[in-house]
Length: 71
Image 1 (cartoon, rainbow, N blue to C red):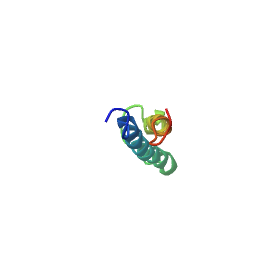
Image 2 (tube, helix red, strand yellow; image 1 turned 90 degrees about the horizontal axis):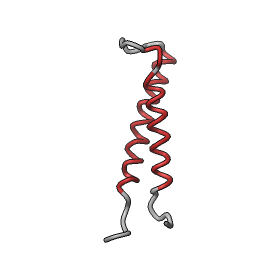
Image 3 (tube, rainbow, N blue to C red; image 1 turned 90 degrees about the vertical axis):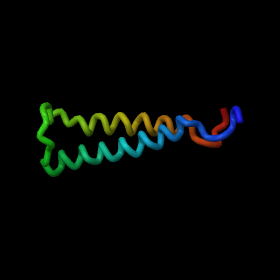
């Protein structure tokens, strides 16, 4: 089965995209509602930054390793 099937990196991209969207959405919810978790450095809005980073990397993996793509 060498060279056939779906790459594990595609599934990694799916998971990172889903988690990134959830974390980014929660970060936006915090900013819009003003309900921020009581943690140190909350003013940096880490969920927005990490969610956006995970979402970007996940979409990159989805595009680069999508099934049916010619190598």
